[in-house]
Length: 334
Image 1 (cartoon, helix red, strand yellow):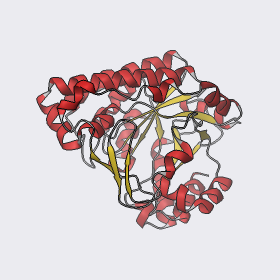
Image 2: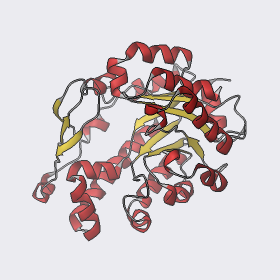
Image 3: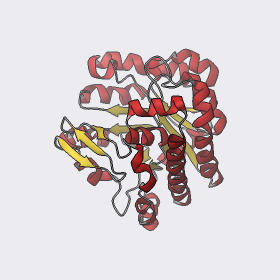
């Protein structure tokens, strides 16, 4: 069974030969622990691949900017600060910190319009991996980057005209981005926004449904109309919006299962959505033993895996995780 078929069978609950693997190596690993990364990839190849973009918009060029502390200007006009080599920094000077800049602000349309679809398609066509787009739409996080997190929450609380205009502009940009990927040869399109704290959503479920759910619904409709799957990532406890994400058509959801009640999620949603990882990266992966990792995998397996599909063995590898613990994730799944 090819990797592409394995993942498709997982998403459609039609009996893959095993759980598909998906390793996320954060920039620190790619930059400073490359031999370990290559060793793990050789032993447990990922079933999910990602195409390169031309002109650049990801891959090694994107990772290289995290190599040393300092600042950089992103394509949207925000100034980021990196405090630690290999660790993604944070926005210190948002492009729209002052609303007076909004009247002349424009998204970086050329990032999408100048892409070479042939290059991305060739990356997809020369592999039997299940191909997932680069991160595509992330309206809430983009809004935070442009305004600053504290300002965004105040903007949303007061429902200002400026925040609505900015969000509409962001959404227009991401509709174009999603449509571009939907026309490509990828198997699935990747959406993301981090919505949860360890305990609950960052905003009320009612506000989320009123403002952001319609945006994601539009992205999902475009992707499904093109015959592709929707993959969505969100950190934190997002249990309150699980049924909403299923309703709008998310096929695979990457969430921090160990921030929630895994068994309750299984009772309510197993067979309705594919759980795209993960294994606890707050406690078990950085501080546990390989045996602890194995027990965490077995908990997920017992709750969510019944042989039909619906689970992808995804693991995020950050700088504080040992090779032994990350390897233990995939060994336990086998």
